[in-house]
Length: 303
Image (cartoon, rainbow, N blue to C red; front, side, top):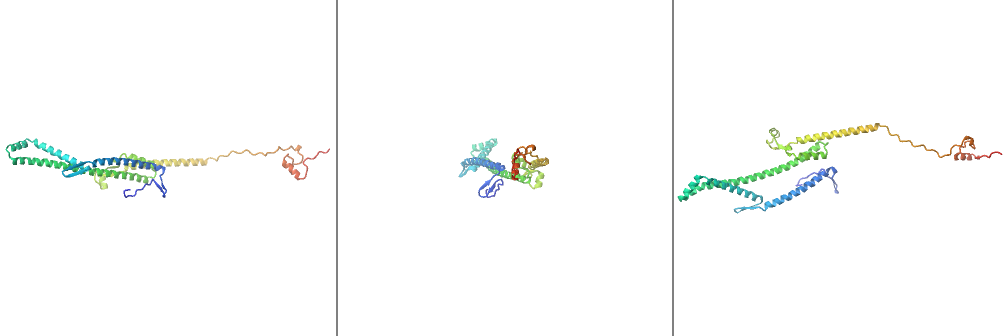
């Protein structure tokens, strides 16, 4: 931008595919768009005003002036006429001047008339020229002061943003929301950050008394207080989580409910007095074992 490299640390470039803006940085993008739209509107108004000034012309003798210079020359000429007219009225109000001029005319002494009028004409011309010169000098002074004020304001805006970034790096406990809040808060009081140097500060920093200096002490106090608060909250949260985990570790593990024991789907055992052979419990397995031994399962009663 303007021949200088600018870094946007809130945008991450992804190769040649594009860029990613994290959610916490979306406010910066919104601010950038809003500021761009505001500047566009201001530039349009400034262009319209400039066109009005450029259309203004004023001619003095053979010299023609345009734009802002025409306005300055017009105002200077007005100052000259006001001063000249005022001086002439003052001379004409002098009874001695009027009497001497009238006597010279009555006597028909043109040389005397010229001698009386010459000092008055010189005084009137000098007053007009001086007023015109002072008006042009005042315009030039105001223009220099305005340019200096604009440059100073732009410099202060850049230095203010730099201060926010430096404080953010020095105090990692500050969140992006903290930095944004600090910027909004102190942007409303630039005279507290950029103020005239006192006599002691002028001697200390080697500047003139009254020269604007940067004093971020209020910002540092605010940032340090907020960082301390964030650290305290983080420590309290860490202690709470540690106590919770320790308490959970001391608790006995829950005993899962016992499943009911499975019961075999078998026939109830045959009472011993009803068994047909030794080991007969009425089951299929008992009957099978008896058959494998080559014995009859049921023996006929002897008749």
